[in-house]
Image 1 (tube, helix red, strand yellow):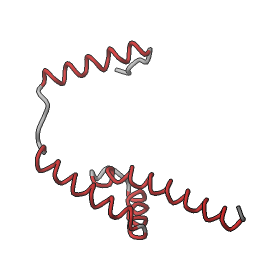
Image 2 (cartoon, helix red, strand yellow):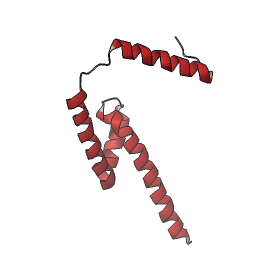
Image 3 (spheres, helix red, strand yellow):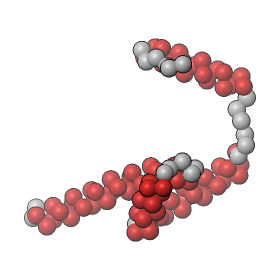
Image 4 (tube, one colour):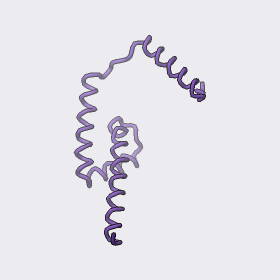
Length: 100
């Protein structure tokens, strides 16, 4: 493989890694849970990467659908208590301790 081909392969790998990171952080942006620098980095990438903007559009639509169909729903207290108990049990089994 030539040096030029290697650089192209490395650039493609970097782009895929960056796209993976961007798409992982898109939910933070959609939820308004990222800082301004992260938002700007994500928006810049989305403006220059058509596969990511397509994926972002799908995730944005999914987020709106979930909010419309499930927004405001809260799990019953009994379910929340059972889940908390099960999480604590599984953490105790693995030897990890929760901070109070």
